[in-house]
Image (tube, rainbow, N blue to C red; front, side, top):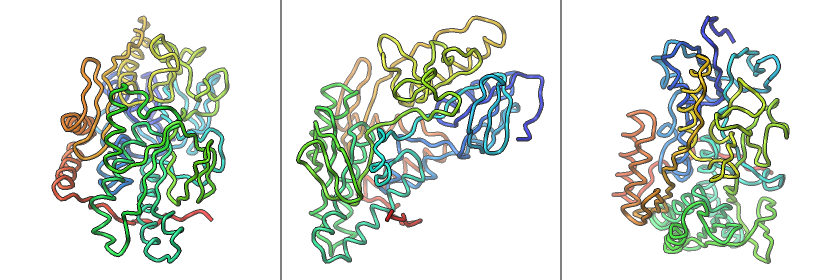
Length: 425
């Protein structure tokens, strides 16, 4: 890998997400060598991926080069690499570009889509966990409307204009709301020769309420907002299969669609060497103690979505969201310095700052520790928070201008098929 030799302890971070970047920044000017490995050379602001999928933003608005984030830090090195295996005995990483020794290792590889071992759904559905996947979805949505113009088969046309989203967490809810606004404000102008009133947006949730991690009031209000926008919300329905056109469920309910979006679950993006039952739970998240140490290992840590830190408040582990990842990265930075100096580490204490989701124009729900509110004020709060946490002044300005333009013009400029999505046969 051609990593410079140094007398400083080498801390290797796998993953440039919220947790990895927060940790790297914390260690940036300390007397340690920080090596960050990621399969992409950019950090992705994942909460806004759905806006890339629906043409509201271009991908470069929510991505930022990792090298640029940490360019002023003297002891930092980045390598574009895919980590294949961890040798916990020899303190060594095996990657597609070579091997790397470490003194301390931090796994911040995030999460990936969980298909719950359903190979048919995995093969035929669309996911939205990365920028390439979001661009694929954007292309598919637009291509399906183009195909709907060409077909004379009414059933096929309806299937091309039918959207099925599985999973009513923040991702599914926000995507459904965005699609509903496209149906209302954009499709009639773009496709005047197509009866866009036939467009159906179906949001399927296996439990009895949407946004189940948020308060009951937020869940109910979000459902009301979606129904106002014309979204069909199906609760207590579990999808069992999808063959590329037909969606089957655990009831008599079926859907014919060529746009099937899977947002029903995520799991830890584990790495060989730490993927055995000794180290992970059922959600394939790495079990860590209160210091983010992988259980049974003194110099290997995990932070963010891939880490499962169980406590009385979160018996299944901290929520897989940005805030726990950021806080864990910052805290681990302090603890690694303490460990190097042979001082006792400080247990991680998660400060729950709440949760929020936007459903559409002037519609959002916000749960803060002491306040819960919905509607237009919640929508403004949602926008402010997301702008604040975007990396890069240019990205903040571009996203803000796009939002203002879209709000005034009822438009989404990035309705572009830049790279056609190749449908599976």
